[in-house]
Length: 213
Image (cartoon, rainbow, N blue to C red):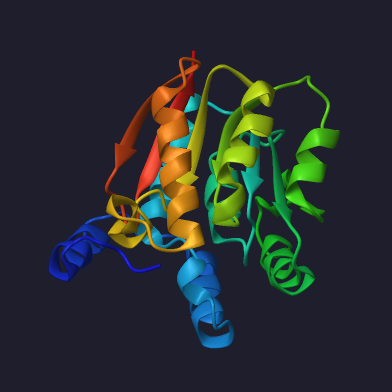
């Protein structure tokens, strides 16, 4: 999904964001070279945002819904303490195989556990305790609301839920596709939910932060 920010400003923001480690740059290049859906990958700016959020919260446990080739997971794992844990969910064995190969080359890879299979089944099977400090949703858009409802009870009070692609290329203004309608409905759900405080950011294709009360 393309960003909706002016391309020149997008480049300026990119160039004025701290560069990622060499391994993440290699992962980005590998993804764009080998995967037709490479635009699904978060880039420097969003990766840095996720890493910063994990660090600011002093998070110890993170749940990610949507691994793809692992850029976001590695970005967040870098900010976890040595005994921190990140569980990342995906149903695609091919992309998670790529992710695992890069996790194995990182000093932070030991903090990451890939849960291969349907993410809703994975989340429902998780114990209620200990709760997660941060949840990142970046998977199939039609199920954002379901992921949200399953993940929120497993998030600690004061914990943060982060959802990607919440502007969906601007289509949320007048949704015409299933994905656009699902994202618009998800945005309305979060906006009406008294269980969270929330803000929507125009970062890349839209990032929503929802803090559990």
